[in-house]
Length: 194
Ligand code: G4P
Ligand code: NA
Ligand code: NA
Image (tube, rainbow, N blue to C red; front, side, top):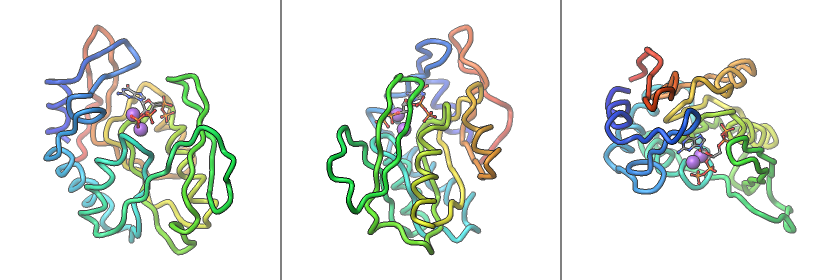
């Protein structure tokens, strides 16, 4: 998605070879018009999949997720992160290990919002090691529902997430694929999802 790639070139900050900071439009301040455009692209890419609901994780997945859901005319559901789990009743819960943050967290979704006949489009802001997307997919499985696809705003293609998801048979569509952050510079994989 050229508009997104240009925004990353203009405003992204390469913190180190692993981490790209995009807090001017995605992770802190949000560019609502860009999010709308992102939602339109995801909606088009997954239009033929019979999606009944969009699923993401709080907090940064919500903006692209809600725009996608609006375009598709379905609800957005976001998995909640919770520190301690005393009340598990009525929830689907999965552990997610973050290699970036070196910590494990638990995410959960109320059972009342997922049904076996749901076809779920998973959306997230970043794809790194794939743990968040895999955790969401496991939640969908717990509900006996189907994953229709996985839509990612920014994929770090030098990390293993995409490959892991493809090996499990999921369809992955990433709007910007970062090949490398070497030399303080963002270099994209040359393919165009638009
Ligand atoms: P994974 O799910 O693909 O395995 O990713 P990882 O554990 O490495 O990511 C942990 C958190 O860091 C996630 O946000 C993810 O979106 C974010 N993240 C990963 N790589 C980058 C990066 O290069 N740049 C930025 N800006 N974020 C990155 P989170 O903890 O869920 O936070 P939130 O922002 O959604 O609240
Ligand atoms: Na994030
Ligand atoms: Na995220």
